[in-house]
Length: 357
View 1 (cartoon, rainbow, N blue to C red):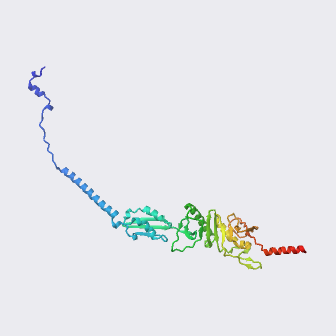
View 2: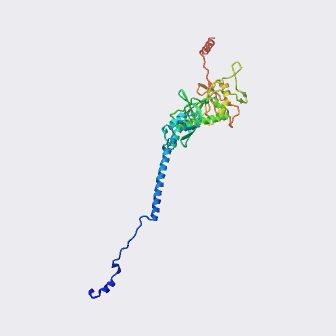
View 3: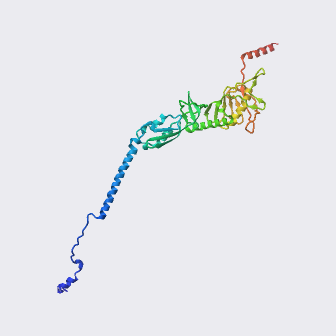
């Protein structure tokens, strides 16, 4: 059908509404409302607080890290405690690189390790004392012997650490040899542990015994050799005291008790061996005369003067009471007496006269 045949009024009523033109609505917007102002104020306040906090933090950090009130300027600001032989100058030299630096920027752990590298220092504690001080507390090593190094004497502790002798100090120790700086620290410590065990066991046997030990040779880790003086052999035997020996005229003569004796102790059982030495020295001097060295390394045996030209002798047995369950046999040796030429000539003359007759 032709659309023109319908009346225009009907067609107008059938036209969809969305095709009709509508009047635009005007929207009124407020530039600064009440809620917007609150938001702007919050943001502005937060930014201000952040800037103020940053400024305060910067100022405080600058005060702590760069101000003169926190800086290490004077040597008196380093407080040292626990030192007797470590000089204050040695410790202050370690903090020389921190001059003018804030105490908060000083590497405490690094400085502690540097202080412990000083030979006399066993342990060190380094801490800050605000606002501008450093506290150092050290524990020093304890020497137990003198160490002979050529013509010089140093000190050495139980761990084998070689210590320089302080200018003002008074020590009374035996001299140790056989340890030098070329050895490893473990080897030096092992030999000084051997010396410490010897000292302890000898002192348990007789109080003050180490005062008679003048030198200890640790060259051989399996044989501790000690030079001992003042062995008077005054221990009591069942047959009486052996402090004196008869001379050729039958009178009592006192043997030489002040001459030092070199004793081979081995590397163990020092207490028993030292007791054997005390019990037997008088009898050995009575049998052999002068005792220069004694070898006690063998189990229960004592060999007298092993380093001298000797003639084997029967081994006398000690009757003195010992700590061991079985008595220790003693092998005694004494020097061969030289035969003089005059004696030889007299013997030859006697032989000729007898043959002539």
